[in-house]
Image (tube, rainbow, N blue to C red; front, side, top):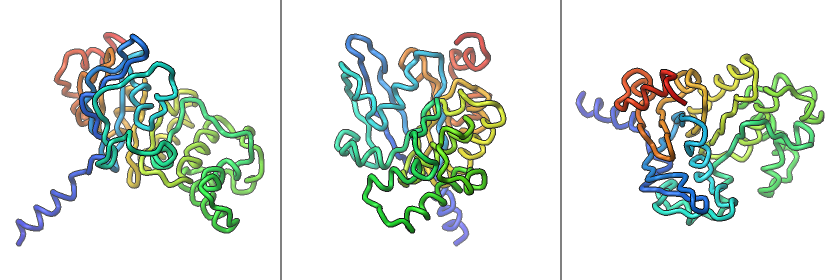
Length: 263
């Protein structure tokens, strides 16, 4: 009986895949930007993507919510599976309600704090003010900013600090109840204090969401991620548990990049 219990506990530790990328290539016109990407992103984990500028990190992130398709001349081969279904089979509107995105520079709408958060639910047909009030409060609490803004919800979001604006953007993302959150260098424009707040938030959000973060900050990747992928020249050089990547990498190129010998 004890053995059965141990087996169940081990099974529960296995995280389900959310995205599975298989033999994926992407071209911008004649430029081969992503080359034979094989990568699995798991639920309730933070996956960091690191690598030098121009190595394909942000391009890969934008394939996961099909934003990359907005770029003229993009061609792809291989496949990306999301929740056991081909990514290309999802209507874009549905996909982007499941896969939230937070950008490098805070991008609040030129509206009130309240309207920024309520915008997504309204687009999805929610008009009841009591329900919207609930969603706004829950989302702002979830982004650790409620106590800072609860008395000025109808103030223009542009009056917030940069760090507050980024947490507002995360709250806006949470309001549509996504399953995955993609973050493209979400703290690169923030001061150290704001960066730490966002990192704390990311660590806590992974209890509910799969989070994939592109970052140039090695220390940040080491602090907050469960797994790390090292990209170089459009390829995944190495992908493993973050502790392994940073302390026992298998590829010398990974070791050289992390130790600052190049990139």
